[in-house]
Image (cartoon, rainbow, N blue to C red; front, side):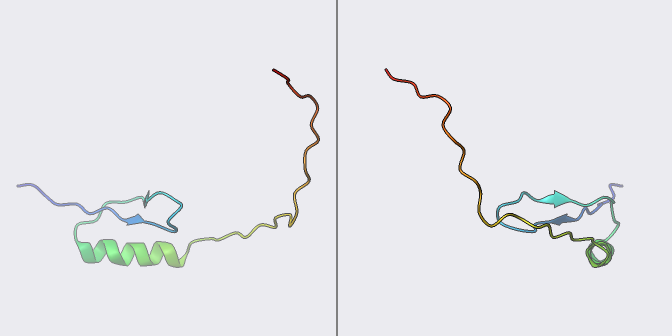
Length: 64
């Protein structure tokens, strides 16, 4: 008899690929509960970014 195992995949943003979470589950309900628990305990870090970037100076130009 073949057992069906379920994996959990999440997508955070349209710009990021799907991510498979660790673990295999016997039922869809077990997978859903595990996903909720994993996402509830997820750590999110927001980092500071510079508002303006400095333009790089041209060091050399090529003429053809």
